[in-house]
Image (cartoon, rainbow, N blue to C red):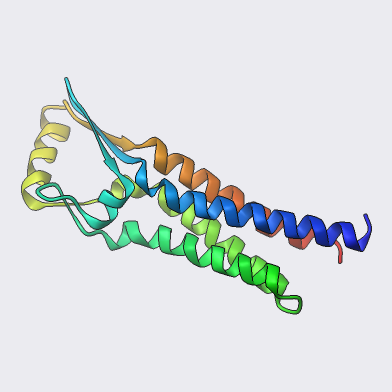
Length: 162
């Protein structure tokens, strides 16, 4: 491939990664944690898992970190598009941030900070009665996969010749 085509491909991959990163953050408004009981299914959104929900969840720094990492990765991806001299470094940093954020998003259920009263109810329902199950919601799964793919897009650019 010619140098011009490689540069165009790198730009396109960066823009795709940026859009995927923005999409991953926007998926914070979709179900992140699903609580399945005998007769009920309760879905908690990503922002509820991060910022809390009255009587159920408290603020969770560990659930905030992946979304902050994705936002930082988008910033580094934009810097990679805008910069010529440090673009390779920006792409590597952005790729690492996207991939780490994607992996951390798979731990959303484990990072939820339940309130003390609701945590006791959940412990009884999950461990003793075996009637309740917590699982990842579709929003978190898609967000994690999109973030990892965005990281691969950013890393793949460094494999192309100048």
